[in-house]
Picture 1 (cartoon, rainbow, N blue to C red):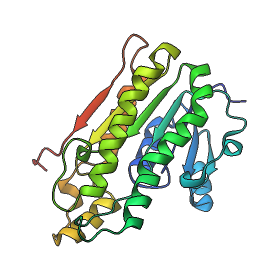
Picture 2 (cartoon, rainbow, N blue to C red; picture 1 turned 180 degrees about the vertical axis):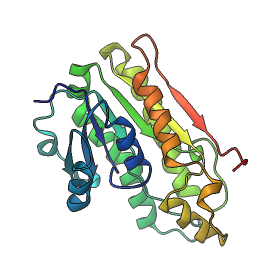
Picture 3 (spheres, helix red, strand yellow; picture 1 turned 90 degrees about the vertical axis):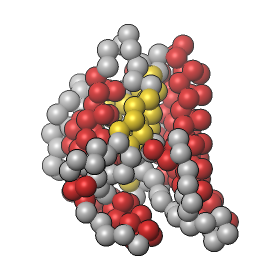
Picture 4 (cartoon, helix red, strand yellow; picture 1 turned 135 degrees about the vertical axis):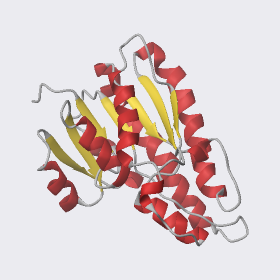
Amino acid sequence: MTSLPIALITGASRGIGRAIADELAPTHHLLLGGRDRAALEAASSQYPSAEPFALDVRAVTEADVTGIDHLDVLVHSAGVLRMGTVAELDDDAWRDSFEINVFAVARLTRLLLPALRAAGGQVIAINSGSGYNSGAGSSVYSGTKFALRALTDALREEERANGVRVSSIHPGRVATDMQQELHEFEGKDYSPEAWIQPAQVAKAVRLAVDASRDSTIESLNIRPSGMA
């Protein structure tokens, strides 16, 4: 049994999730969540203390978390981007988006709350600037992020008495594969250096993780400076 605090990160094989794993690796035992076991095993081998936690967040069950009775940090980083107008988006686009971006977060959190309570742990949700604003073509994505913000706001108040802290991180555009997809949808050229780097989002997670017990980073917004 590890003596390090334990952090479970979903979407840990790439992008923001992988950057968060890089950031927390020196101080935590990592459970790297994702669907690609081979990629997770390869990533685990690069950290001082880590193991794959391979699962589909859409189908997680109580059996998947059996044995996790103490969890210090749960980071929800897995997510999908579906863009299109209300006239264009079909039911499957709406269902899939809410299943991954909202329902899976609620389900995994619920299953792990006993372990989080036992550790006096914290839940950190990687939300988005779209959790505050919506626009043409972003109804389904923003809808999921608005819903995720409502979920975390409620969870924060519900779990305060149980010693579980809840943080919501709202990055603007981040240089990831998802950002490249968004630029393709918009018909724009993509320059990764113009946007927030995943490591900067990971530093915001570190700020929340390192906050002393007398404080909580409840919500943190990060925006591109436009200076790169």
